[in-house]
Length: 343
Length: 297
Image (cartoon, rainbow over all chains, first blue to last red):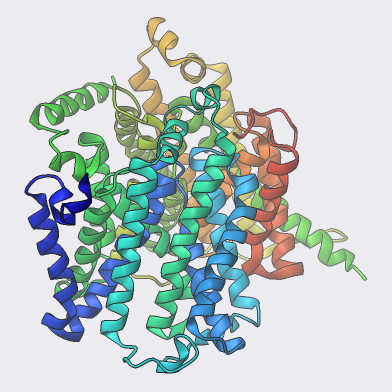
């Protein structure tokens, strides 16, 4: 029935014009505004994708993964090692990032997914820190010297490509990967049966099990999937910034940023990490440009998270959707006041 | 060939370190029992405590230990005021209360770390200690560094006072009752707001003063918090969740592991070794090394 209908008409309502406009805008972005803004775009798209990858395990499955940044670094080093130590083109490194991150994620998942809540969070964090320490002492990762990746037209697929590997190329690469991540999240977690299984285990693990869901397996699947997505962005990032060092690509701040972006936007929603990712990324950039401080956004974001959780627990998306209105906030303020009755 | 002198010295250092870790672990474990929320900010209290020491000690004759009373009072007040917020986010009709509790303390941790980082910059700061210097040599055993010994003595005596309060006073009984069943405790006429605040305040005070001592032993750095958060979690997982005597053993194991790893492997790989231990414990004995805790699932 839908065969003769153009794609845009199948989208609901007047939204299709917005989507079409947004698509044109996103594609035209680097051509309209030049290299500087293309660079901002690369960062924003990458962080939206990373925030969404964290949201898969942290938001949809309810497992706060504080070692997620490790997979970003693992992806970066997989690409780096393939290109520098073995002389393969980038695509091989990209594939290697997928395979290696999946293997490591599986091994980490077996014991640590037995933990819940903060214990899972801290076990994964310890894992990420130890990955960094390992990368600093092993030879293949370049140790404390890091790795410098080659970036010329023939390092993409092995034979020279007819376009330049520059800001514009990376903008479109990140755009494709970011949109693919969002599409994957939409399909798997919002439309597919898999998403219902994941949400069921988050909401009540015992009830999910009594319905015949193999929760251990589903948890492992979500974890491995989300880690692979992070590794993909890591591998492209490595090639983009050309020089990688364990203290940069395996830093704890990478995980912190992903977590903050997803939390602030709204956990377990498709659009939350997009809004949160954009907001935090821009806030960080603006505070470093206008205030000259690269850390000032941290306490600001800490306060924002506390206020959000106290008064509007479903995040910015909850406010935008109208789930949190004035009465809700008023009720929260009143209830909080009662709890200060200490004497 | 193992050097016996070096070996005993490592054991001494490890045991003395363990003394202060036990303080952190026990407070942390209690906060978990009472509030049913696992506190991400634990390491940041250590960090803020260390920085309080670094800032205030020069005003008190460059001696960090004189700052302890101030830290105890200030952190108790801070904790008592933070507790109602944690209580608020983990109760009521909101979805995923446990997750919200974690998220809130994560926000708090980010705020504390970010503030200190913005104010003091990323560099190390010393917590001066002009009186507690040098070490006492015991022939045939090894040297007891004064700072570490005083630290361990403080840790153990704080622990004893804390345990006395918890098990021998009415207030302590109220706190244990809340840990067992919050609703029933409230029905018995216990002001749960007040006693939860006391428990959380006591935990914050213990952790903050442990931070001053840790700052005196090592150094103060805005990024140090996460490591102590990991240590606190390590102790509780190793001990078996909700099993207090296990925490004491786990604290000593942690101190010994840290000092042995630092000497025989590398100071940078302490976390890797801890992760390996957690990995094995969870695979082999998920209820802790003594098998007496709740399953860490």
